[in-house]
Image (cartoon, rainbow, N blue to C red; front, top):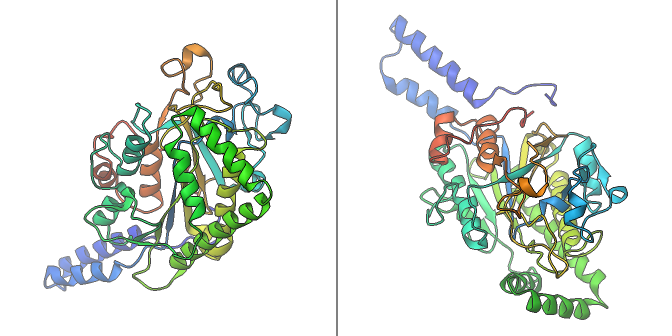
Length: 401
């Protein structure tokens, strides 16, 4: 454990109350069930543990985030898109971090960051819209109208959630009450640009032309544009931390954020380019959350997850196409960091999913269940209710410190 003093958990409190209730019945001092109900109601306070969900919309290229440079097939599939081994922030003989993640690499060494690799949701058809729906609703069907975090709140009223977003994302939609907040004053240009990028993503020719137009337009002011993006991210994460640090019993302990723009069909780049720029934005968000949460960081788990991965082979426009297996990010003071959680399947052609994608060997719901059970203290049966028809996705060990 990272903390010298282990706090008493809500589960321990409830167990103690139940035991004391049984003892009182035995001695005739508990006159009705109302007394025990009152004790349980008093124990129902806001959870101290924090969960931050960051959806990485657009399908990030996990193979160039946590790079399997030690897999002999990686550079064969990516002769110009592969990141050279001597440029990587190496962590072992198989994996190295993208060089854009210098601060996150240090967090990994400080055991505050991990990745699960070769991981995917149950979805296999490579549509952004359906893939995001299944990731957020936690089922195997895109038409399920409620999100898994909303179902969590419906089952356990200790948890309250807010989305830092223009609209309430699917993961928080449902019968339980949740909130959303977004400042009207933030610059809308970045949002509109990302929306156009995603609309054009399936047309490589138009996508490449649009990327070139944006590059020319920003050529003389790119530094200012980058600073504005970083400023906006810091503003959003700072406000998220304020919500999470509030002592008000009605304040949230769960926040949902999103970072879009990961659909890198063209101009993905290696040391520079769209992927590197997006990774810097993500790193800015996580570092800002750590700084602004203060002592609450030790009770925090951050999940960063995309709807699916990208093809193992690079395409003809300097990018990658929609794939399957990818990487999932875990950060925070409450995780057992400094590990790559994976059953690595190899990138040899015969091991690829449908001959083109990283073969997933882990279900994202295994990670989600583990965090809900070990960090947010729900039961195994509640986890199965939140993620229906997911019995094969077993919780994992050693994710939470």
